Amino acid sequence: MERRAMFSILKAAAVIALLLGTSSGVHAGALEFELIEAHTAPAEHPYTVAMEHLNQLLGERTKGRVAIKIHHTRQLGDERQVVEGLQLGTVHLTVTSTGPLGGFVPEMNVVDLPFLFRDAEHAYKVLDGEIGQSLLKKFESVGIMGLAFWENGFRHITTSKKPINQPTDMKGLKIRVMENKIHQAAFRQIGADAIPMAWGEVFTSLQQGLLDAQENPTPIVYAFKLYEVQKYLSLTGHFYSPAPVLLSKRTWDRLPADLQKIVYDTTLEVARFQRGLIHKEEQKQIAELRVKGMVVIENTDKAAFREAMKPVFEQYQAQFGKDLVQRIVNTR
Ligand code: EAX
Image (tube, rainbow, N blue to C red; front, side):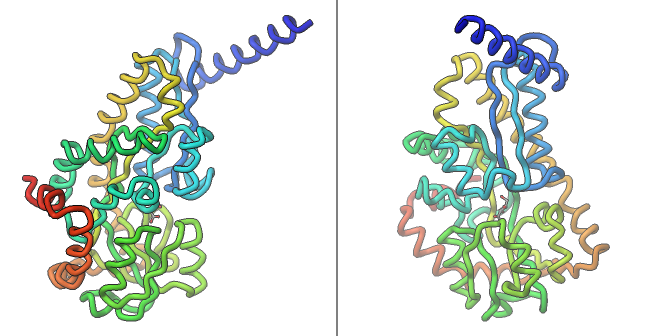
């Protein structure tokens, strides 16, 4: 009796694995590891497109033993909940902003310093090098494996009532920031009313006028249709948003060494593709946002923003260690 029940369960599992295998276009082998993945951005955002690409490559390279079940657009919750899910093993994989990550690995916030990176190339050199790798390693002690840095891009300010050119234009504006203490401090420093909030509540709050402003890279502004609730896009590039790809350590420990290697190497390899998408789309999106009625301010006074946010840079530089921050700044 028991054996019969067991047999039919196994048969059902095999049929499901087979169906999954064929539906993803992979022929050989049965699915052994279905990675439950979740992130905030919608289907057309480079997070999702790159995750689909990763899924395809993993399918090919593991001959169908590994697949990713993607949940975009906050289907499994906001970023902090998802990262907690990695610790519990209820979610296996994510690509996330650094918004909530300081709550898990405080050192991670060093990348959130205002105007830390000169440009994307500078960020890649640091994040793909020794400094970035040692930041990813720190996740292991909280039950998470840091695989690679993908990106969301440089963050810009959007507002509803007036364009932002200078830091003084931010005085008294209610701006949503991520749940990230450096981001909060930087905007408070220039006189804004910085309100930390999970992403899920932002669109409605902007729509209802509870917020005047938010800040995000253009792919998020575009993909979430923020032009419906925001009039101005000011290209300030005040913070760079890397997007670490994180795997539950419980999942990692279950993977045999050969699959660990494929998952790790392929995620790192896809970083180049993912970052390429962000860059390829940015100019196109800015043009589209104009068509949708947004006023884009390209020549914001970045030097003034940098200067005005400097006390926060210095305060946190002391906290993270001047050596580390200067090593980042001096990376060429
Ligand atoms: O990770 O919360 C944010 O503003 C993030 O940039 C966004 O959800 C993508």
